Length: 201
Image 1 (cartoon, rainbow, N blue to C red):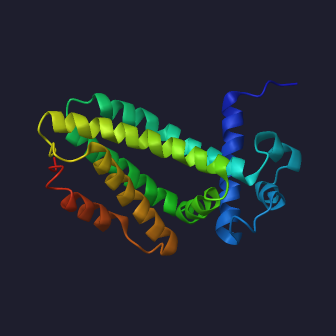
Image 2: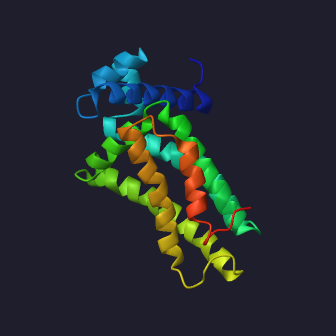
């Protein structure tokens, strides 16, 4: 029997996640069944359950993918000599990612997942873990910028980090409710709003 490669496993998991998201967008997270998902993938039930034992596991894997995709960028931003420029690049990365994710209906699915997480502690713990990691990284970058006088030192760096997260997730919520909301003008407004704190480069 041929050996299954890691690349194959990753591709198969992504195939299932993508199929699940299409189902969640069409039917809603609660109304979608695992049967719907494996029908959408055109795989057997056993093939799907080999990778994911539930819808929650699929949602958690999608959040994990987004988190891993951003890890290298955060690590690089933390050690950059120019933390303000690093913040601008992080904003661009995440908002551009939201623009492409919106074409797949990801905001609608993610907002539904937030609601599910409020009554499902394992899912909530997963979301908290990633949010706390994002906040920790942003706080380090902001503190570094404050240390060199680029950001007002009287402000709580963690509070600024939460504000940046709120700007992102607030737009994701708006995109979930109205996919016609344009991202580029929003990003320009965000950077203009942040000008007193984070000078544009």
